[in-house]
Length: 101
Image (cartoon, rainbow, N blue to C red; front, side, top):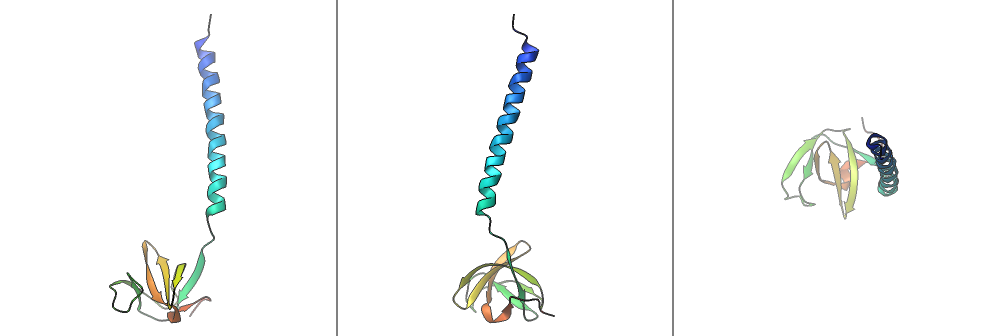
C-alpha cells in the first residue's frame, strides 16, 4: 500500500529543490545583464530635469547643486539621468562625474 504522507514529502522536497535550482539560474542570468550604476552630479542649483532633450521641453523637477543622479544615456549635448522615481534630460555641461560642493 502507498504511504501518501511519505509520497507528499518526497513531492514537496523535489518541488523545493527544483524551485531553488530555477531561481539560482534566473538570478545568474539577471546578474549578467545588470550594469553597475554610473553616478553623476548636478553642477548648479535649480538644474531642470526635462521630459525631452530640448530647452523647450517640459520641466519634470529641478535638482540642487551636488545632487547625485544616475546616468542612463547620452544624446548629443544632453544626458538622460534618474533621481528618485523621476528620469529625464539635463544638459551635459551642467553635469560632473565627480562630487560637487
